[in-house]
Length: 418
Image 1 (cartoon, rainbow, N blue to C red):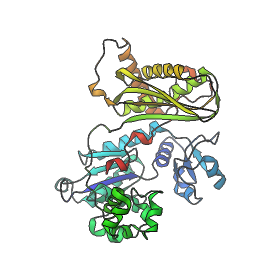
Image 2 (tube, rainbow, N blue to C red):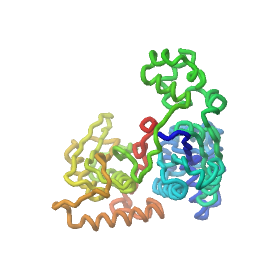
Image 3 (cartoon, one colour):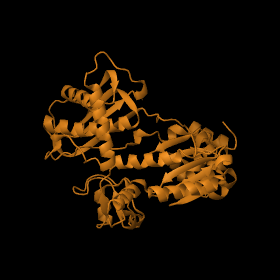
Image 4 (cartoon, one colour):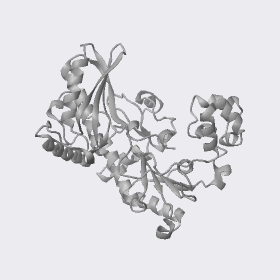
């Protein structure tokens, strides 16, 4: 690992909401969602679902990410709610990635709205890192229409903590000599890997701030909390050395979505429509990561909240919506016993790069045509929205043509990267 690294962490401010606001303004809307109490999430008509993102004015009503729309509307009856548009978010994320690629060849998409950029040894070419971070931030704002916060440090942990310190539209450094002043006064629960289970244990040890943890006896905390204690003690002292993982493909294990239905699903046609809507989204996400899948699985939950699943390994990996859905329906027919269902899910795994995909002698002769059709449909949905094109089976069915979106399993979390 190189010494004296310079790492940027670029974090989109209120990403989903900002992207929705910019898109709507660019298409003639008069209301900027960022200026009023607003949120992205769920279905505004049925008022089902959870809050995925919220505006700064919505925070004044104590609206929390992850809470139900029902609870949020009780706090703020005039809350402006919009449904998520996952295709739009990936398009915005890709646009930001393309801009960042001008400044470094080593960038890592950490999530749909967060990117690490390795600026090490780039000063001779681009100049002072702080000045360049301001330039990048301002370019994103001027050219793409949304704001970001950028943290700068010698490792990914401190860079990410830096971007969290000041929002929105800010650049913040957290170099080792700044840790006592900027990081140690923060509550210990603000540190990565200090969760709800760990916090009470630390509090019993008299540890309430990150500084308390950093200055605690290392051997003692290691004895009390084992390897986890050693890890968070090192984090509290700003010690972390993982590389910025550049490259085209995101290292993911699987892609999936599920949906809880507001009514009992009691017939095969409705169940298969819902599974098709989920498959449409999962397959589009699979193609977006430029992977193919070698295993397809479904999950079902009945009205008695009993869960079961069924899966099948593929002879030839695929990213084709039609092929994946054919397997999904076969799995459903094998697994379903006719009981009312409340939740259905689809997941693909055993992923590999589509660059390595080889044709099989048993492949459908129409496979290439289906693949070209899928890519054309993806482009239309990314440009004009998920409702721009849909299969006829969804017309007047009451089932959305695409269900689900970018999930947490699309991108590795901090725990797997540091």
